[in-house]
Image (cartoon, rainbow, N blue to C red; front, side):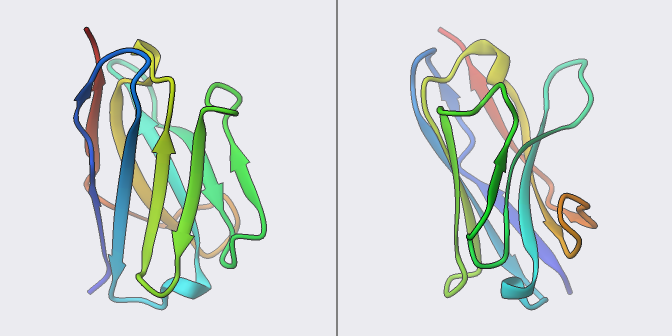
Length: 118
């Protein structure tokens, strides 16, 4: 059974940092590109970051460039999202998605909630 389990979401103050993790199981993790999406209150789900199978290429939404870093550990079947300088616009549920085709996710985790507030 394919599973993606996100963790690390929390309440954090503006300007703070947070690291999200997503542990994959039930499929060959190393053969899939991985993505992080988020959905803010009243907003549509949007791409935050993506990383290729061997970490050779990454892609970021303009709103998070220079603040967020996506990485992966194929030995641990885990993809990470390190987030810095968080602001209220970063509030939302963050979803991990696998993508056999680049930027075309076909399976999602249940998400982890990030709330940026003072």
